[in-house]
Image 1 (cartoon, rainbow, N blue to C red):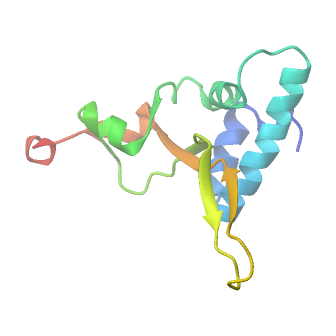
Image 2: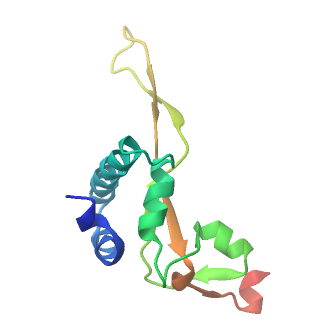
Length: 129
């Protein structure tokens, strides 16, 4: 997948067609590789900032997670599919299979899900309380 194939209109189709978490991770990894190419070419933005730039168009230009939209008095429309970026690095522990081994600690970046202004609608008064 090239940078050109992952920009603007087609990027939305690719993001919204992902059905499983694995498909989302695979696409996010691929998009991130393309973003890293931009960084190597001199772009000083983070991978997530580059991804957000690719997601942004005339329709989708403001992005928040589910709870942030709720704080703004909006709700995500039923059936909408999220955009995704990398979340903050987290620590986790993998339990040892037997008692002779030590648990292994590792770090990872989870997927963070965002919705755009085009995917939300105002909360009704009763929903906001």
